[in-house]
Structure formats: C-alpha cells, structure tokens
Image 1 (cartoon, rainbow, N blue to C red):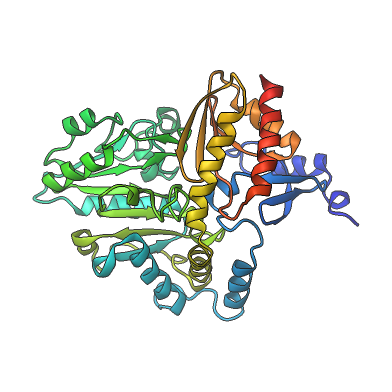
Image 2 (cartoon, one colour):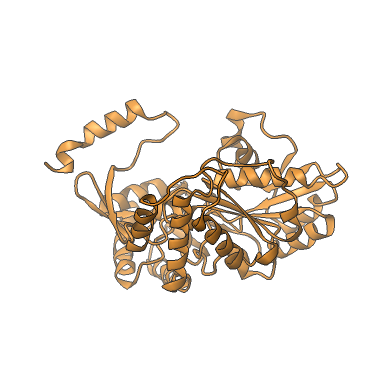
Length: 401
C-alpha cells in the first residue's frame, strides 16, 4: 500500500483542519521524506527544497552524519534534565565558544528554540540594570525575534504584536538608521537587539556601518549589544556568523535553526563581562542542552567544518545572485542578503503567487511578505541543483509576470 493510499490529499487536509490549532496556516503540502536537497510529498511528487526548513536543514535531508549521530545517541542517552551534564553538551558548548570567538570568557546556555534563546537574552538584558537607571530595551522596526510574549515584545511588526498587547514594558522600536541609533542609545538603555539581516522582513540588509556604530555606542553607555543570529548563523552567510563580516564582537549572541540540522535546539552565547550577569538558579530549561540535541549539533557543526560548507555558502550565494540577475523578469527589482540567504525584491505584490507556481513546478521557496521572495537552500547544494533552480524559478517568474 502506498503512502498516497494511506493519506489521500483530501483526507490529510481535512484531518489537519480538524486536529491542528487554528493559529497555523493551511500547509502547502504533506511531506513524507527527504534526501539531500529534495523532499517528496504524499503523492510522490519531488520538490527541490530551497528553503531548508527556513534556514534549518544546513546538511539537507537524511544526511548520514546526522542520522548516525542521532541514532547512536538515542540508543545511549537521550535526556538527563539540567541536574546533570553530558559529554555532547560540554563538547557543543566548547565548540560554540570557539566558532563564535567568545573564547575562554564565553558562556553558553542551551534551550530548545530561537524564541527561547531570545527569552534568555531578555532576562540577561534585565540583569544589566547598572544603578537601576537602565530600564530601556531597544529593537528595530520591522524586526522579528519570535512569538513568545517576550520575543514578540521585541518584534518590530505592529500587526503581530497588537492582538497580544500589553506586552513587555520598556521596549522601544527604532528605525534601522545610524541616526536613530545615535538618538536612542544613552545611559538608560540596558540592551539593543539586532538581526544582522532581517530575515522575516524579506532578507533586508542593515545600512553599512550600522553594527559598528551600535557597538561603539553600546560600549560607551554600558548597554548590551545582543545579536539575533537565529537565521543568519551557522555558516549561512559565508562566515560562521554574520557579525564576523564586520570588525565587532557582541556581548551576546542568540542561535538556533541550523545548529542541529532539524533537531530542535537554541543557544545563548555570552561574551566578556556579560558572562557574569546570570547567577545560579536565574534561568533554566528541562530539555535544553540534552544529549540528543547536542549530539546532533556537534555532528552538524563538525560536518560543516569538515566539508568546507561555509565556503560553499558563499559560492552558493554568488551563484544564486548571478542566476536571479540573469533572469529577464520585470518582477525582480532587488537582490538582497549574504551568502546562502537571499532575498528578492519584487515590483508587484505577487510573492505568494510566485511561491505557489514554484511549488507546482517542483521548487520550494518562500514569501515572507507580498513583495519579497526568500531563498535559503541547504549548504550542500552544487551545480546540478543550481541549474535546476535556474530553470524552475525562471518558469515561475514568467508564469506570474
């Protein structure tokens, strides 16, 4: 009996609508397996996956290194709670201190998602009160940091926040300009949260020199510079982390998504004096840093390093920009992002139509808003996948335009 016979489209869509919470949009397809850069749906149709679980599946699907690591660890020790340590937990913490550049003064807190990492970072910011006058937390207009009450408070999208207000007090959203930074940061600011690239805004780059000026001002006024690299981290932008393309070091870094290739994990990494703010008992997570998730993280990060996939991300990004630029479409007005995180600006609000047509053709891309397409393929792709993307994406643009 085939999967299709077991789960017909009408059947699974009806079951989804009846069983799943109404907060979720209707799914695009029922996926049943993946291999490399491809996934297959319940009807046996193959798709080229250029979203990678929203920048999560860095090694693609069913990569043997990840499969072996998870299989071995779950057969040995999957969970122990935060009353105990485990070898993969310590190995991953030390690895993150090394690749972030946090070094010996760096400290790592493990959780289960990016939003949880942001929550930990908010508490870190609250601990940076100084003499009690540092009561303000800054974030950027049109940013996205998660959907929990704290992370939503930081998210600079009023339409997402308003149904749940009042939210966390003391949070202010400023424009992504150096002038706004200079006007907002003073001795009353405890921290500023910044995405080096605004992924959910459509892969939007910050102005040149923005991070450097934020670092100067926060250092001068004793505020924490906290970077949200949930989407940009783990080699996606052509360096381990996007901030490493500038000459700065943050006080804290929030990570998730690509760390463990699809196994849920998040982390807060602190640098320098920020590592002294948390005291025992002030934060915790039952599942955070468990042996299974951290073993997966070590396997994925180790393979990224061994296989040179950070360099491949830069190569992929350059190729994708060239492909999109060469497609003669009046819809494409701008190409944004870094490395293998690419945003395509559109002249018309037809992003969802392009995504739907691409799905029909067998290509998965994403529309974070009506005027933007987001592309975030696995870091393992090569020329064959890029050639296939060129053909399918050009057809989707042509059909919509």
